[in-house]
Length: 151
Image (cartoon, rainbow, N blue to C red; front, side, top):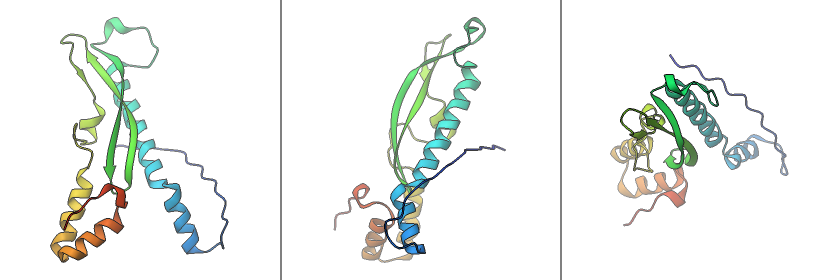
């Protein structure tokens, strides 16, 4: 079992009338789901790196087989939209191989931007709808700039 606790403080101003439609629109504009996803990914990244390499800035490297080897930026596209985050790289001091433990931990495929949640959702919708309805639903369900469908 994995337990994550992320403190979240959200402040925003409503310029329009205060009602459920405007509140939900504001939540969508703030991309709160994407923000939470980034925070969870960051927590997993720090935890997995610490598990391999030990505490950051500690000087007991002689005892560790793995060492930090920098970071790389990664972009994925999920049902929440596009998310950019930083991934720690780790070097195996015995073999010299560099790997990113976060990617397999979260089942993120190394060279794919679109993740399985979009593929699963689109195939589920396609089996229940016509082609035109599927295109319409997918373009409105996920941000339009991420989907290009040709008729």
